[in-house]
Length: 438
Image (cartoon, rainbow, N blue to C red; front, side):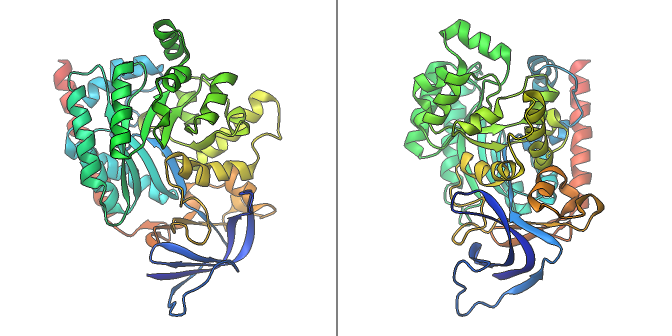
């Protein structure tokens, strides 16, 4: 399929990858960007569908670097609790009743929200991964998925086998829309021996690792007590970060030495600003990580802990919280935040050919209308996108060149059915939790 998006303000990188804005057309063929403004060659038989993007910004599709999509059924279920109480007293008991059907419709609800918010790719750690993959593919979203592995759980060994089966089953996805990684939950739920087994399996299968790391102060104290190291030192010294890509969610409680290790080991970090604040986990040293050369992207975490699967909100919060707490208005400027929400996040989850409007890259594209009152006037489009835009401004979304959202409406499946079926699954889950608590 040939597509030419015309007349928009293109958000493109300079050779240094600093984002700028230029006027011109974006040409797509067979899921790949072939020309951006004056860069790249259009095939001689190029016969595109022409899309008018006048009054719009045309930018790389957003990437959600850390999510638990199926948890959308638990949105608002357990709020105003610290992480470990939230997990142990509310979330884990409820999740014990989730079925594959629940996960399918919960994921579909999350993917609907993300696609309409301009997100083209997400990295997920949960269970019933086949159902997550099916929902993602049917709605038209790119997904980097992992089965959550709890090393202390009774089925830990079988879950390693299931993970290997998932890699084999989805590794030959002809459209390359689904990728599988290994998902050890965290160093406080997985022994060193189990983490080393995960790493060996990742090397054998050629797939990456996605883990929660240094999320809370309590985690740091526990790992320090058990192993005499910080969580970052612990996983690096085990050697598991040699498996690439290695994606670490949160990294809130990290010091200067930890940050240097993350950079040296090539670890990608998913920064989840809203979730970390809402759960009282703390504020990660985002500016220090980026300045040290750590590859950082934004993640929402699950809807149960963040409320909204909204990377625009994460991007805005990620910058403003850092500026406010450091009393420095100049750190983390708009262009850097947009880079982290697109190219940085794509690299963090292991997609080297995504996240930029560059010939040869995957055609994951978000078209943002600039005609709303809160986006007027357009003195600086990058600033508007980083600080003022939101999901409601997204007009069109292309994933691998396929138009999945047009004029703000999902084109692949029926939105109403997703919402009604997710609501029914939520009611079923609520009843099961209530019956178990009686």
